[in-house]
Image (cartoon, rainbow over all chains, first blue to last red; front, side):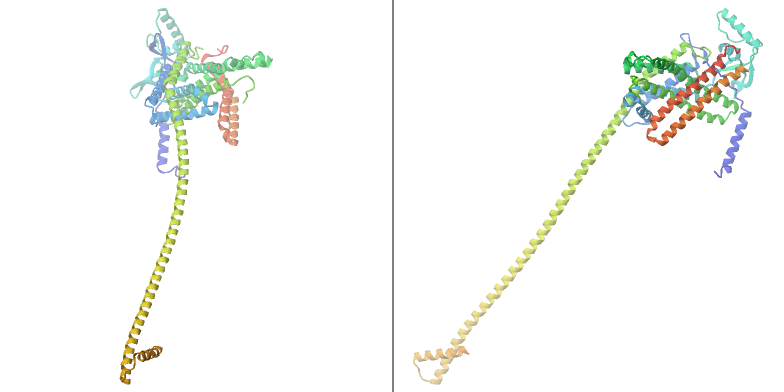
Length: 349
Length: 163
Length: 77
């Protein structure tokens, strides 16, 4: 530590600081449009059903998990090698943890659900960190983005080139009230002709602003994915509880006459029911909020300092991505476990 | 809802997507891996148990061999003791034999010598008697009857032998 | 002005309580693990559950903030 500011270290330090300064001054990264709904990719649809960029990345995560899974079991051997070894190590570790929580039989039974959620979300979250995500896409006129987003997006950037490739440059453009009004008129006119809106008719009227429509966007930043998983998780909790406890499971919500209906029981039942619904909200927004906030963080950091500093935040997001996948999976598992506890009243431990 | 991006078809697509993924993984990926883990765990447990049994067997075998070695060592000790005792006995026998033989030889030699002495003495008596007769005859120059002669010889011999 | 301030206040104030709650929860759990390391697994599970319930409050604040930013509030214009 004494030699921290001597010799090569000093040169590296100065170099890093110079690079930071230069990147902050020279490489100007525009802030991508932060948009809640996933962007539909124009011209891409299956049976008239538009494809969004988050759907593409969902499929990428699916494929990653499936390819890794099938590669791991393709040449399954008694003495594991390479990928099989890694996958087995991961499985063994998590299986042991689940066994600690719920016992051997339940762990074995619910392991596939846990592992599918974990692996799928892990890759869905980690794909976000691959260069090109949120940064490669179509450059759309601002007016189109304004229309597509239902009026949320009203600022864009001028078009330019970076390293010879067309890109946005850090010169913000905002739509004026007149331009917004004009867009709405033109959209109405286009719809009257039964056409889609493709931007301003002539360049003189155009605002000159453009917006990037990325091809790839972290799957969990589209609320549909967290919500879908949350619904599956909560519905599966009911199914699993029903299967294991039979009709007794529903005592959780409606206390039977046997125990003697007390007002407090009804209240507890209603509370349980509300908490199941709240679970969907908290499940989905926890994942969505963390990944969306991470995405915004990864937008803002290069916007402030283009080089080096964002690396630290990529590391943070690597951790957050794993943590959220793990929390989602383990919570599903714990709720399964709690749902299958008998609610007869004598079993509390 | 729409502004939050929640959209029925997309939501349904995501749900279906996850179910497909779950079914595929549950069908094709998890069972072989979990079974392999289970099988390996079992095999390790079996291997450990077998190793335990083998170790115990080896221990009893070792104990058995040790007692055997101990017994053999005692046996050898006993044999050595026996052999040395026997050798001792043989040695004593041989010595006794030799001593007895020597005694015999010595005794025989003594008797032989005695006999020779008697014979020589007998011879000497006869010769002395003859010589005495001759001498006496010469001295007496007369014949003495046979009986007196014999008497005289006997007396003389007695005298001589007494000397 | 209110459009910018409202979501900021919603998530900012809404995160105070859960922040303290999560801190207390983890403190308690770590102390418990320190006292009784054998029960670490069970404590960890319950800690995660507790954090989840505390964090849910922050998530509701986040939902409100997001609604305010992207959907807008009636009456705020």
